[in-house]
Length: 92
Length: 344
Image (cartoon, rainbow over all chains, first blue to last red; front, top):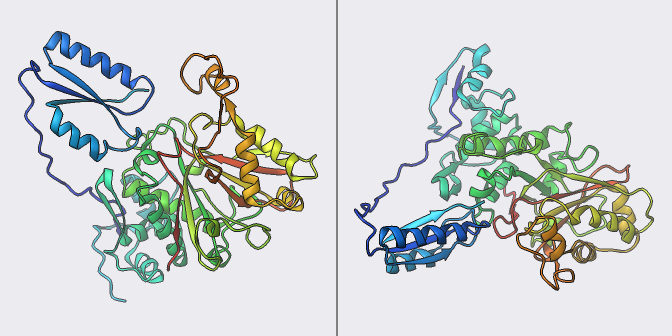
């Protein structure tokens, strides 16, 4: 008997990663929180540490529509204009 | 119709084929029908589909679900070829961005896909709308839902313990298909409420918890029966997060409620008003965060965002003072029930 494969390979797509900065000194930090309880507090805390201990210049907090969707277009556009580094976190 | 199937082929001894499918990790834990080219072609022919046709694209997985892959999985699930149109519509439903595949396909919340079939196809294919509504006994119901689930597993990668991280899951994740009992229902069918004609056939998919049964043998009228239902729903799994809910009203309750002259719209409005919780209660019971503030005792939060988020269905056995409600997964804005026409 010959049978057919029910599975599929996800189409491969190239992802271009930006080089990681050597230092966070003077960098603008974007914090993207996913709306889960405490995720904002955790990210703000992380942002404070990045400023205090690593010399980041500023932080901006962005909020996704909900935890199950990617960051929406407005966030992407704004992040491109105003941030050098992103921290995205899941809170639960 | 000449078709060209492009899936990888495996040659196996006839007696080993089922075991081979287990070994490949292609099954849900139950035996499957070996998907031979002949069987897959019959499935595609019944729905008049080209194997390459894309039925849905799951963005976050970057996966195209083709008719060929749906047909292979439908064969494995035990579907007859004439079930293919319903399975296709269900796949379209979970591929709709409003359904939001990533959440229910992955979440610790453990959602199944509840499929509600409406219109003439439900009777043509003998999809169960009566006794033992959520249980075993009907090939069409059991195999269609299983086909959808095998597509999620084998094509989309929602494999339990890997990408499907449901903490508990529930038996509906094997198959979860009902039809509305339109022949006996006094009410407007679900698909007509959702914008289709009565003579169209549709599948509505909702990311869903298991069915919660309630009992009321005492009330002679709508208000009595629905008071019990509302009380049961008020503190159910989704309270505080405002998911959608399906309410399946079985024969006795259906007749009692209709005997009071209530429509589905009136049922929804009653439930909307009678299932609300105070913010104080939701905070005290740790369903929403925060300390109880002055005024929270009188600030009320509905369990759904809008009365329209109660999907009312006439379904279940004729006898017995039981009906059920089914909380949706997550919140209503992270996954919406979608309805697709069965076109084939």
